[in-house]
Structures are given as C-alpha cells and as structure tokens.
Length: 165
Image 1: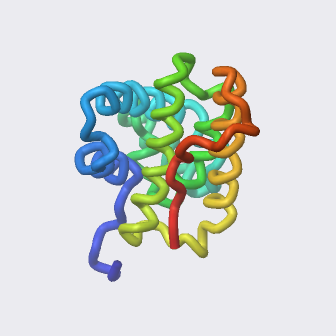
Image 2: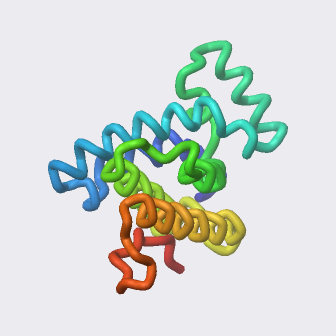
Image 3: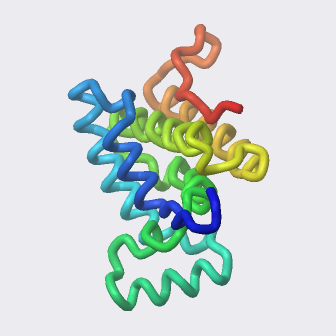
C-alpha cells in the first residue's frame, strides 16, 4: 500500500470476507455464519478495546461519540482485528450451540487466513497473534470435542484452517 491509498478498516475486511469467502457458500454454513458475524460484532464492540493501543482507543472513543455501534471496526485496521480474534474463541465467547461454535472457529481461522493471503496483515509481523490464535483454536476445538463426547485418541476430524505463509 502506498501513501495515497487509504488504509483498510477492520469493517472492510469483515464485509469483504463475508461477501466473498467460499467457506460461506453452503446454505447451512451461511446461515450460521450470519449469527457468527453478529456475535463477532458484539464481541468487537465490547471486548476489543483491551487489545488496542492507546492511540487506537482514543480514535474509538472519538468515533463512539458519532455512533457507538461498530466504532472499533470502523477506525481500526486488519492488524487489530487479527489481534482480537484469539479472545473471540475463548470459552466465554463461544456460541452456545455446538454447530454454531464450530462454524465460529472456522470463520475465525478463515478471516485470519483471508487477511494474511490478501496482504492486509503480515504473518511475520503478527506472528505472536497468529500463533496465539492457532493455539486458542486448538483449545476450543478440543473443548468442543470433549463436550460432544469425541475422543481425542480417535483420529482427528478436520481442523479449522489457520493462516498460512
């Protein structure tokens, strides 16, 4: 990106992902993904500030004076979005219905991969957040498997995709 190109907001990343991702083509997945998106937007509005820098929090505070809903994603970029995703797959934020929670994990992994693949986020600069996200996705998958009675000694099922190089 050059100096004349406006920065991409987290809102644009989310909108582009939900409009274009091949992951969301199946009708059942698409319906669940809409619920995941609403849940993600709530999470970002209520929890994302703890992951932001002081200047980003100041921008969010100013933006909230104009319109509180969605302020975080309007003024932050893809890096902030990826940095907040590990918290969105903590047990406290996993959706209560198992299939919704599994789609939540797929969507989170795919959003991070999407941002990396499109060059919106540098995987090396965001290595800590990406590694933390991978670990949290593994933990959440294991917890959901345990809750569903799936043995971890059985051959593993498909793992949500994680951001690649």
